[in-house]
Image 1 (cartoon, one colour):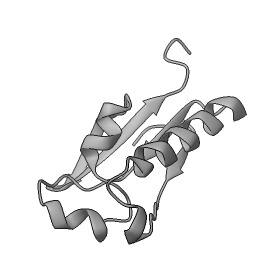
Image 2: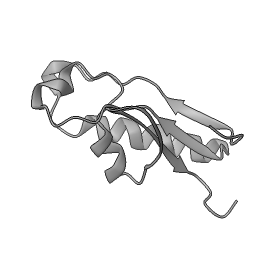
Image 3: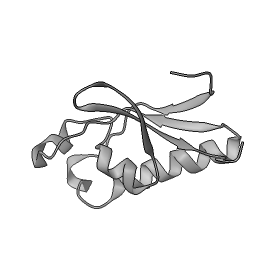
Image 4: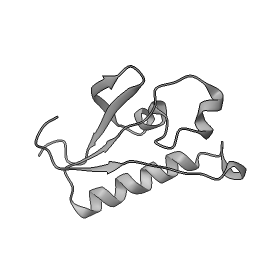
Length: 93
């Protein structure tokens, strides 16, 4: 999409006994914070955009709404339900 080096969050998994407790957001925050501490300019994710309640158990890339709540913004969309979201770790750079 551009020449910005990114780290990617490509997969998340929370065992079914631990779902619906906010752990996906915690995993995303930890990955984002690790990327920031490591000096990467941006973190990208490729989640699903869906309102389906049951989809959460089969969507290993996460749901777009969770990423948006954590400050990720859409930078592209190459399929109707698959936005590319990015978190700029240093917006001034």
